Length: 404
Image 1 (cartoon, one colour):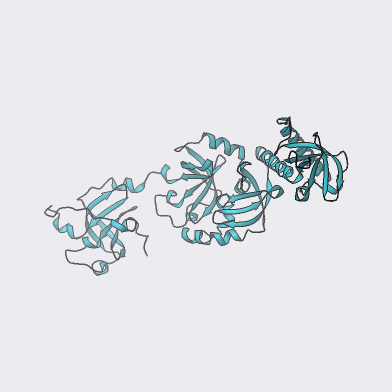
Image 2 (tube, rainbow, N blue to C red):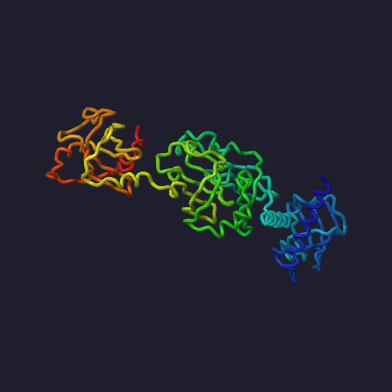
């Protein structure tokens, strides 16, 4: 254990030496990091020789540094210090061990990111976007909820997206006090910004491979991926090191209520990159866009004005959903059921009824097929065909399962 600690200290010393070698101030000024030698250790004070006209002084809170035990320092020992004041009104140089230690921690974290290393962090707090954590030396970091292992957050995929979102704050608060192994995905000392990811570990992502894919990938590219997580709102898929979300609306051309009905963790899938933003923190994939739309294939056989047979599948307050063929459903709006005023569609038709219907509208964009029962009587063309306006209930009209 001691040898590992000594090795770490030697590495840190080497990193600091490299940092100082690239920048050695000719004259001390505020903010400089310099190497000095201990002259004397007093109670609550440390005198350090930094090559100035006078000795430097470290006192008060500036003596406290996580990596340095000042009680063990002896005259002649080398230490790295931060210049607070090149010379005060007493002619002394004010120095800080604490701030030098902070810089050392930043250097080590930057090196950790370059080497794709792992760091264990402690969760201090949670907000709607993720977890606030303590990293090396107490430096603050952040794990976005999208970078947490999805298995931690979503125990069940049966809950709706709205339910999952509403429960997120409670779920995240349960992490407070826990330690999480992570990898650094972004670090910026000037902005005091450290972004971490648990997924880079749990999903087996190769960080260097992720960076390479991120540099070369463009919207429209097709990849072979592996499902790494299943949530109420979609699938997380890793493609060549770059993990992204296949939203439930992009899983299949059919209605998707539970993504787990289609794929499970470990499944191999072919995906298309449809969106990427925020330097790869948000990546969107699609499965269905690489599959022929069965609705488009089915509807190509039909045209507006044609008489077709259909079976009543569902009756709602605004109309009747009818199955024409496998994968092709249409809507008879309540106003198209009868020449008479209809206040309850179930008084006109029953589930299972087979009807002759007229196609009055086809919208490939909305995947909508408008049907009429009453206009079958006017198939001689005496009654003009008018498209039913979808209005506020557009999504409900397109989706027979959107309302119970």
